Length: 92
Image (cartoon, rainbow, N blue to C red):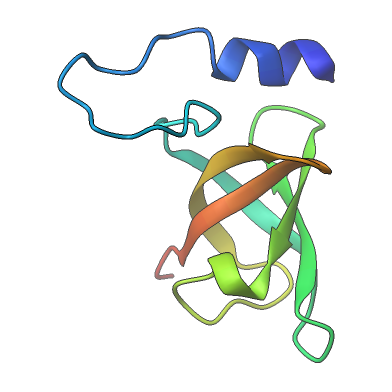
């Protein structure tokens, strides 16, 4: 699992970027919401083509999501581990 996350961040940030956060993956990933508790404000997304599950917090969700929704997202490594950010539902 750790190898998966290391590979996400191997590419260096673009030279024209003013961003100081190098812990964000600029790659957009796709996955399926495995579980999301809207009352508690968190859940998990299963990344397509892997067995990895990524934590998601309601503050990083752009569209309203529910269990089994297909979504796109980026990954940011935070103090407690990888987190899905910019989570958007893929229309059916």
